[in-house]
Length: 225
Image (cartoon, rainbow, N blue to C red; front, side, top):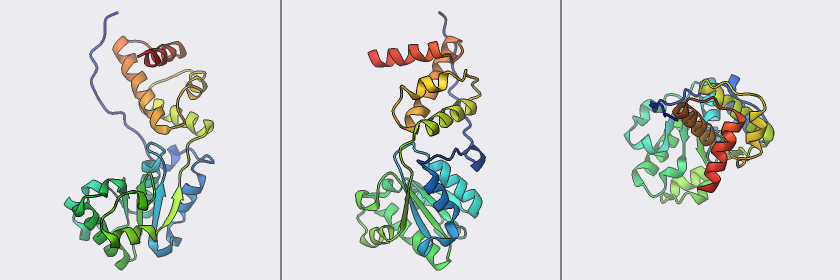
């Protein structure tokens, strides 16, 4: 079978509240971020496994609180004074560890936000004690923050995520495909994202629709490799 040329174009992933499916795994975290004005000391840690939906929640919070989202790794090059004019969500804070410039930048940003009484949201997969921070004052400030968590998704949440991921890629799929996939992938939104991307790429390459039989063939080939 001839294979089509594939352009590696990223899917447009919508991260609004309207696209956020609330389930037991994430309901408490959503409630905690919705009540951001009552955060003790104006800061919150959002923890959860990779691909659990922390970025989506951070985007919702930023939109509703008028805040800015930035990757932790980008902090040393940022204008911290300008950044601290709004609330800030710092994503993937575990990537600060061992980098003095990054750790110092978050420390100074934290203090600027505290002085201006603006909120700080920090996302990471694990608590600060596990990041390997080398700046003691930063570690103490992160450990003093309140914590909310996203748990591993249940079937309902994973199903909703799969539907959204296919929709983001403008892929129309039969309803029976979703429970078929849910039963066969790890309890991870990251795994769901990777599978949908692989199905989209393979379907484009072979000029075929994404059906249950097509997905089964892809999953079987992955297991035998």
